[in-house]
Image (cartoon, rainbow, N blue to C red; front, top):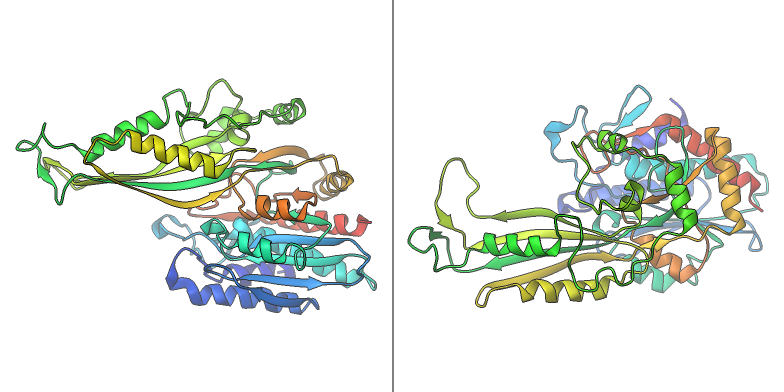
Length: 443
């Protein structure tokens, strides 16, 4: 096993689950692992205080007049549950047919390890390195990066100052087909709780005189998003920017088929979006609204004829470039509250929110990363988008005002956030080859 693989295996053994307090010692262990690794490469390191889980920062300044690269990643991972659906142990990395299976393999430990190992090889080859390196590896990405705003405000002009920001926390369209991402969607996550009384009621005795919170909730959800995919929140689409002709050309060039997407996600049929747009537009350049969880009333076997006292739902929205999360949240709150019958208690909780990001690709650095990807994978890269969110990018990119290279080495089939998460070791090797070429040709 190569030293690069050994590093990845040891990293993946750490149960750095940021969303569960039981794993606080493992989060600390992950920070220590990264710190120790960077120190062996002569980096100066420090821990940056965040909201829940601190970030690791490391820098190696070889020549103040040379270009500086800031490399972003995160060491926290999603919970492994449901454990019964894993074919291997989630925190015992297992290699099967050139894929390494473990929680965090592709999101994001495999991808940030590519950069660490590429920088390590670059420094070993160069007697006088002509690049300055900085790493910021946070522990709150899976929480929506709540501490990043404070870190950006505090360190954008000092520690984070750079010429280029590089991020690998996404996917290529398919194996052997590298990509440069030009957009990220933003996110809003909320919870609605309704209450009509102190306890459940007999549905015969009180049916017709007591409001049913589950019915009210269903009506709200039906009004938030119509069957054709249109989102009905006032002003929701007002600031949406349509893709340029060039972007649409990139999307079309991918020749994405519905069957490919359903196979990747192992679901049955395309739906839930605006059918008048292409599949890639719906994934990358159109906003969405989805119910992530819903509850209320009796859930057991058989019958229980009640009117529930309470009902609730978790609802998220994915935003696109130029949409303002604060504006949308206010309109959402007002719209939901306007549909509540008098006397029904409502509580709307706001969790994470973050802006979308759209990259400009006219800087010369994009030509270099194109060449690097072709060198690493033997094929011209395509430009694509990311349906998900990376809270760090829009916040820090706005502060730094530098080109952002988003180059994902994951695959759509690698089960990120799901059981049996894995990472393709060919992509791991080719990723290191790509970044090493990029570093050797950066001027």
